[in-house]
Image (cartoon, rainbow, N blue to C red; front, top):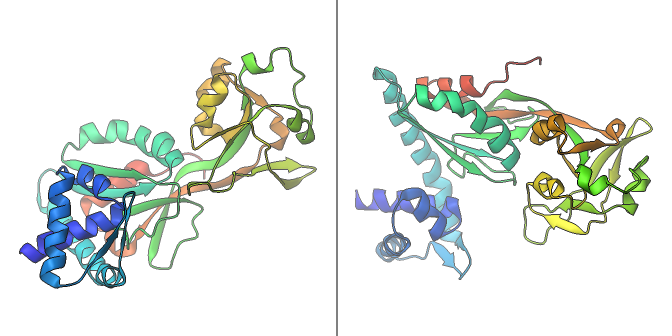
Length: 296
């Protein structure tokens, strides 16, 4: 049992990428968690994690162990959750990996009514704008644009198509000539975002030009990691955002859309999960709560 508990902790640390993040998720101290892993390594006689001051990463031995134990722990958790089907009140935990966009503007609003109705269901929502291997990383569900998933996965639409928009605050536009073409953007202050990886490339803007999608590389004076619409609201420039982020601001006039004819649309967001996981009552309730009910 001691091995089992420590292996479970090792799995959580490896998936979280740091002792600090794992300790916060588990509600334990970082020092005790680190000691548990050190004790496991001592008993096994092999180092499982390479530690630096900023992060941890599995060693070759740790990678091999993860590869073999992760599916078993996922299966155990799944079977434990399915026991909730025998209870009068559905209970269990569902771990979801989603982008910041999906988490804040699609999933969390859907949970507003769902959680009070199901007080014994826990949603563990982790945001990450990078693509995640949900099985290897111990998640039950993931979210991605489009429904192109593996043959052993089920995809469920949870949003309308994602339409983009160029926006700016009236305070920024005051006294300036509004852009009349894509090329006019270079005469304005632009707010860009960077890919998740540290010092990653700036996100290009896909804009419709003469019926085709043009990849526009913003020469930005202001670069943020996310929530660029908040920066635009301060009057600092023009930015490119998913329209669902700024529907309220466009409606109340605190932001204005620029060059609406250039707006491109992407596939809807889809919830995806292994087909073998979709049979429990808790799973079905969560999927049904997140399912898109508008026009397909």
